[in-house]
Length: 160
Image 1 (cartoon, rainbow, N blue to C red):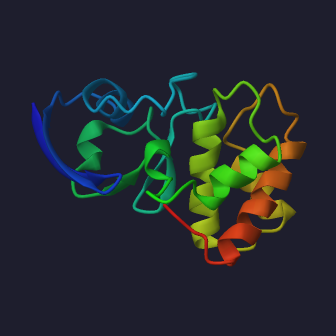
Image 2: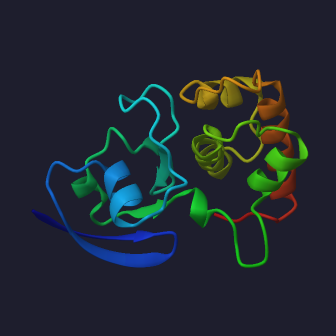
């Protein structure tokens, strides 16, 4: 067993976990934050993407013990009390969401991108989304959504 302390979606947590638990298992099973999805379990699909200290991370590849001392944001932590984050609004308005299974991971990847590069170009968006598989949208609406999210965030409407 391992004791970990970290901040997730603005809340401090102290947990005693099995040393072989993944961050994904900690988030979904122990904390009941089920927006983070398990797709492939081997870091290929991106459905489990979370933000750890501002970086997009596949939580299925990260040990829960590695959460110790970090600040984590999951899809549940994107929205503020006053409404949706720009990335969420943009994906809804531009049909970047189809079945929704991949959406939480994509939102978290894009959230990390926009924190690092406020106005990304096509190449930066493409590189960011390379780790997120979507079988429904064809990606065109996702690219449009990312550009709109950058525009909205640039207007001072940033959460997350």
